Image 1: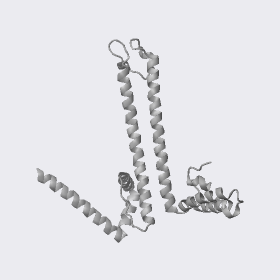
Image 2 (image 1 turned 90 degrees about the horizontal axis):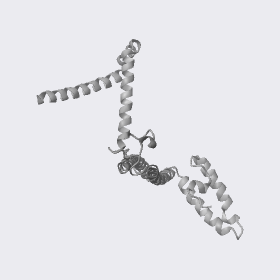
Image 3 (image 1 turned 30 degrees about the vertical axis):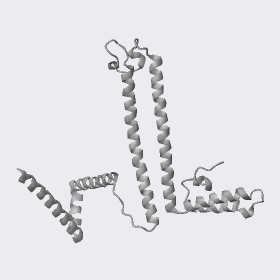
Length: 247
């Protein structure tokens, strides 16, 4: 049977440790070594041994394995997106079939369509506006699809970027981490949580006194805090001066 992934070639789990991968490689190399095969199985053993060596060359190296995992995940995400597209088409066909079977052009009742159908879906003559609802349904699916595609594309870009940076690091290059929107968001969330914790501790008298004593007893910390306060104060004064200068 054809092996679909390098992990399947080495007969290990995708979460296997490097030690397990190495042991699996040695076991399979011994099993399929051409010199240990009879004449009839030597050709197949050579082909299998080539696949085993190629698989271990990637999975046996941590950086190459990370890049391969990212590529493998990208392929699976693309396949999942394709399946979602097929599912969307199936839902659309089912909707059209149900609407066509349950409603005629002139005799439709709101109750026949269930609680999800509002009365405004019918025109003044009581006829179900099939075409209008079909368009609304398609737009809803398109919005969901765009949202899913955007999220999947962001994940793919992140995986590819990480794999590329790891590849460059493996070659000896120094790669600076590029901050993304998610990084900035997480950074400000952490800062916000720290500020909230500090405010809560400051409100409680015992912890407020402990913070004051800790601040006064640490010259380095005191210097850093004083500098930060001076910087923040200067920024606010500059902003205030700019605003007052406009008026």
